[in-house]
Length: 513
Image 1 (cartoon, rainbow, N blue to C red):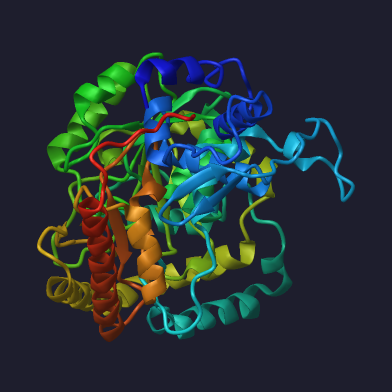
Image 2: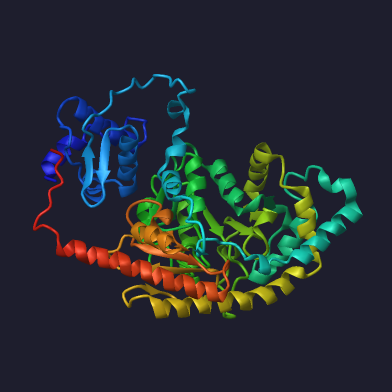
């Protein structure tokens, strides 16, 4: 696409005062050109990558715009040929017209629900193929690694000793007994905390949401690592935050980039120092100290997600948590990965000044996390079951990791690389630059293995193509089979790309004519 021509066409779309989602602005601008006669029926639209580059936006935004055009009957697509203006475009309904079937929901829904992370998640949340599917996306223990009998004993004990008293509302901040036990347990990861600053939450996901609600006004900047936990991106986006990804190296956020993004002052920086999700790498002690110094210098709070605490697979402990270096760090923990997701019990260790605020926001949201589950978890911790459970499960997680790594070594080409994870339950594959992660994701799904593409974890801007693989939910033989199927999928995509390059024309135009 000629840049000058592109700029003339783009300017009316990228209107910063327009409150509509960008994908809707793009779709409506194309419709306007069709109605004005500037785009004839049968005209070919540019490829999504080219148009995204011309517009200076993410490809997913353009994909969403094209999906809207297709749903409205304005375009048709042919695999291998592209997207074209339909032969008989429909009439353009008035924006305020009410559908006969119900309310005009598209005009009522909050703008935050159309944020880039949520749109991405909806687009990729497709029903997997039925039948024999190896699931390398499920980040939870398999049923054989959940301490069912021990949890059953604890629940029985709660009913025998407390009866109906266990079925009322819990205190706003959580059961005192559980908060004390959590504080005691955190000593194993090098933290000394006051139980008064522990807030029990409905999973660590709620803790992220609470912090966002407590700190963010609509439009405020909240920083994350360039690739990070998709659930955090979604939660922060729904608070109205402008989520900005910080360029990272192998250890975490680059300090020079942080300095450039901290002003106007960001409301927080969300990081996962140990077993980073999705990459599985760990931040060094020196980088942690530098982040704490940066936080103090800029007055930008740190939010530390330690979802993988205790999941050390090679007896190599993590460096001290950020919270151990600074009591003004929010420290998040969960029992979903090391016990059972259905408990829905997590916690946040708050800066002392913020504990009352987060407690009141949480009470307004849910009136308290389940008292029954809190009592049962407190009993589980008090009996020492957690340590015994970890002693049984960590060797099995290591065995599963080794099976996946062996399978990948046998099945994948040399230009697909990864690091051997020493802690946590995820492994990150770096794909060659000419492979599209979502194309591999789709091909793998057809081959019977589910993986997570890098686009799910991108805060803002492009990121190197990759796949997240989770090894805690499948047994070793299934992990090896999943690696074999993934190897076939990557090979199929690579062969298609080579064939396309071989038949490509000498030049490519992306002008809309």
